[in-house]
Length: 232
Image 1 (tube, rainbow, N blue to C red):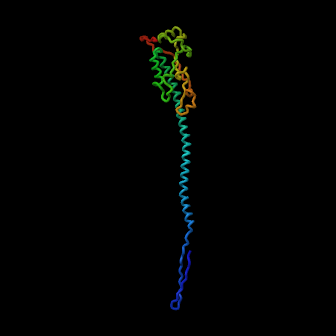
Image 2 (image 1 turned 60 degrees about the horizontal axis):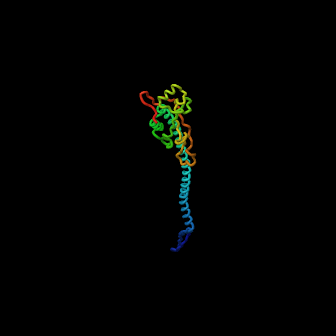
Image 3 (image 1 turned 30 degrees about the vertical axis):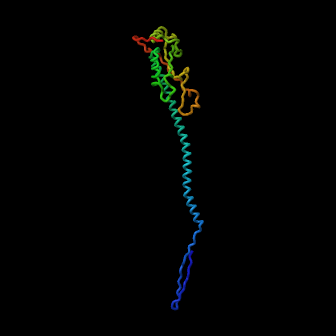
């Protein structure tokens, strides 16, 4: 606020008057200062609170997305592994059948090497439950389903038997190789996932397809100049 003051003086029969203006400042109420400070503090706190809330929301969103992402990746890996095992075990049966048709069925060492070779050296990558013991070899009669009554004394004897009577019960006409669960009557191989869900799986895993290959018998490694009689 401001006020005006008039002063008059007499000089040689004349009166001179002058006006002066004085101003007074009215102090602001103290509560206004406190109100302004509170407003500034509230403005400063609001972005901090907003950022803290946004960080919390981001953490929740990341957790939800991470669960879905890793679940999808796990399912993708398991699906690829199933496809790999199905294709590989089919190849194991084919490899075993081709080699069994030309391997002496009396030579235990040769048959053991055959099983190792069929499973690519002893066991399949990414499938610890499939080993050389999973390869089952059967020698069949002319109907390609009935096992021979008794193995011939040697590959040479088998050739003689089949020459005399191709449907004789001791004539090996076909070789069958199956991929089975070890220690069973050729039960199907079970798929065991890598993910920790084994408690939900049946005993032995999820049964896969029946991997069987039947191929015509050949010479079983017979050579006229080499002894091939079965021992034991």
